[in-house]
Length: 124
Length: 84
Image (cartoon, rainbow over all chains, first blue to last red; front, side):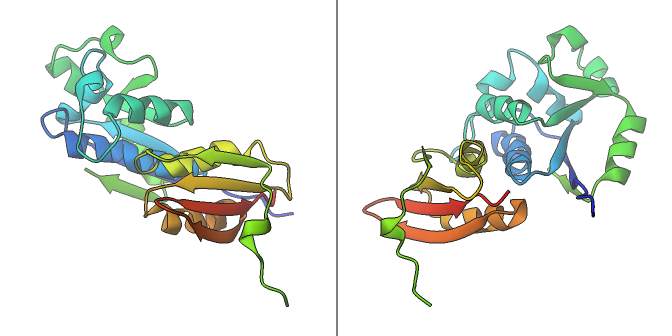
């Protein structure tokens, strides 16, 4: 009996509310992949870390796309993982308790591990 | 071999994804198929033109059978059989 391998995808989000479309598209693609039974990790780096900050992600709206809050909440509901760059949040004085509960602060090693295990990597 | 008449299908579950932005219809389909018994049919209603292309791809990827699409006035009805 053959065992089905779960495919994995990593999506890098490096833009925050200053570019709503590029901030939202990582979660659009992530949600589409989750619907297709792909295991997805979104990695927030640079200004993208604001996408996991409570009080920020609720206010990002890109024309033609669902509000970011809906996209992120759906992503988490369907089992997506959110990695948040620790040096990036430290630089922006964002403490871990300010992040959405599902966000996982990580350093580069975990990100590299996820990338090496992934079948596909997208960058925004 | 007789052609399948989609208008005669009685789906076991229907999800209405009208007004849902991409990739909402896919997510609705994923949720909806779980409420259909194996061998049963899910109907997805969508007014997003892209759904016609996405649902067949989704069904193939996750192992279900796409039956086809019926165009109605301002929306589409898509049918998928749960295979596993």
